[in-house]
Amino acid sequence: MKICIVEDDESVIEHLRPLINGEPNMTVLGCYKTAEEALKDAPFGKTDVLIVDLDLPAMTGVDLIRRVSAPNPNMRIIVYTIHEDKPLVFDSIRAGACGYIIKGGRSVEFINALNEIYEGGAPMSPSIARAVLGELQAQTTRPPSRAEQLTDRERTILGLLEKGLAHKEIADRLSIALSTVHTHIKNIYGKLQAKNKIEAVRKGRYTNQI
Image (cartoon, rainbow, N blue to C red; front, side, top):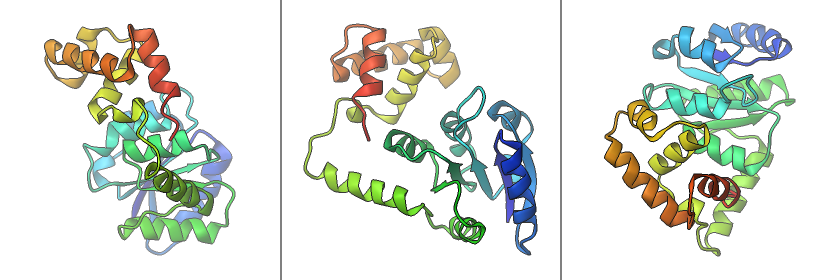
């Protein structure tokens, strides 16, 4: 099992690298302290499992997952973080994460999680599994929020708007026509009942509480 780690805390890297390399069926291909460094140097095409922290210095772990998951469908991504809040959990899963483990657990449990995700499973810490199940159960009794009605592409475009990209820059980034961007933005405004970009970003961020 070939593994890459994206983690800015050197103490965590110093713990994980020998732990993983000590397993007979695992090897660490590389460790990267920022998402940007990983995007530049990590051999994603040769990576079986990518371990990602969410608290990275510039680009977030969720954004990194979103960038690398689709181009590398055979690579399994597991979040390794201190965060248990539901918005981050579900944003990570939507972005392409297959597992979500909270830091601080036993080493053997983390190794078991790596083996599980490599074999096609979706390992989660108990608190995260409970949150996911609770939200799925709640969805059967409540209508979807406005933000939940956005498609994945609309969410991506809303995120790029939040980062300050112009419509033409979004079109170039996503390799789509400018008219298509305008159509998506119009649909976003309609679904969120927003009059402008600032209102759309605010409603998209705070009405999506899963």
